Length: 221
Image (tube, rainbow, N blue to C red; front, side):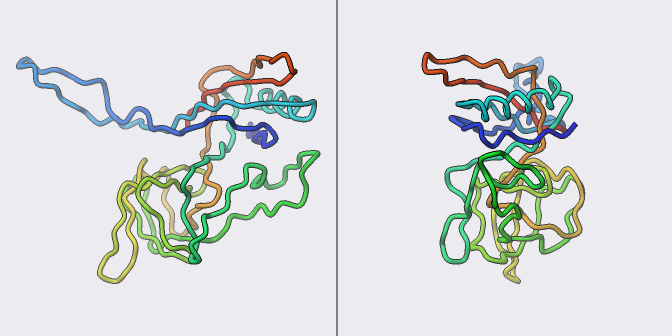
């Protein structure tokens, strides 16, 4: 089933990383090491959370129940310290409490859940594409190393250049998981469709009654 992300739980650390990009190195008879690209590269996120109070703890327990030990999936929000900027030079907003359409926490009301339109595809992009063409709607652009989402998939910019017509080209990782004829790049609240890497959810409590939990998520491919 699709689980609602527990936005009331507070991140203390989380960093996405790409795993499975290469196979285990192989050695030839002469001792030369050969690197072979892997075809199953995917995102992995290890997140640590602080959970305080009845509302947050019950929301977390419901989330773990919905994840069903790894059978369920969820849209994991991806936080980054240096986000793309709009055409006024302001960082794209990021709010860990917003962006959950059709869901409601007891303490939070009235959030705008629609993504901020900053950039979109300038040309159709086929399945497994590693380069896409984009146009800025309300943005100064996106730089190598920054994250964005297309649909429910997370991508990172490897290189950025402009062609003779001024259209921006992005070399990205991983390759597109699906084809797009048109789509907006989600810059302000990138997400990734993921599942639990292993059953998790046990909390360690401090003497003050604050719960701490660490979970590892892998991209649901």
